[in-house]
Figure 1 (tube, helix red, strand yellow):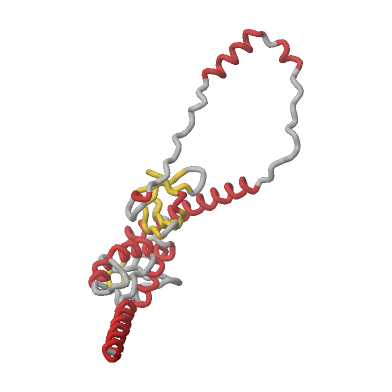
Figure 2 (cartoon, helix red, strand yellow):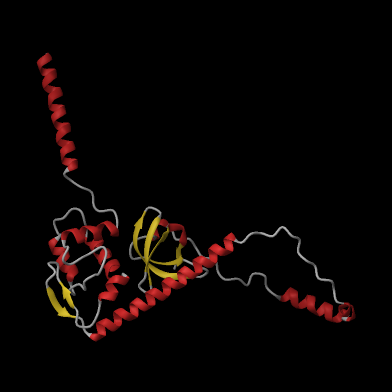
Length: 247
């Protein structure tokens, strides 16, 4: 009887150890775009980089990546597509798109060269992105200054009425009151509607409030309360869920 019990305990222990080993051998997928880009730079160092000068990528490199990493459990095709979108819209990558510079494949081998039209398009995108970034930065500074402005404890100064106002006719006063009443107090801009959880997904169009006025953007990544979006200018911004509204 004791032998049977020991054998059963041994079998259960072995099964538990096998299950633990199996779980360890199945790593979870990379959590965000930053981790995916770091992984690509590690796997293809002659093609991708996370800092310093970037190299122009071969046209159609997504298909090459999808084929090479098809059996890789760490990254999905959707993650690859998002990572490439963020990588190729970064300022350092756009600055690398110059006439006559060769594009590279995953092994870093030189291919076709960038023409003037491609370089002009990259320069236009870069200029727009930097301009939008400056506007967002300016709006944030103004908003921070407004919040930090101290409230004055001094009573408001009341200006003494001009004696000439006593000569205004009663008809004029009544007319002014009538005009005041005709102004609609509800003539305000429509309120923004918070985006529902089921609508907040990759590829969805949203409004993001980065300053005084909302901007149109596309969702690139959702990670808990942090959301990465791409503005119509091409600039990629990381913001909070509560800053997004229905488009």
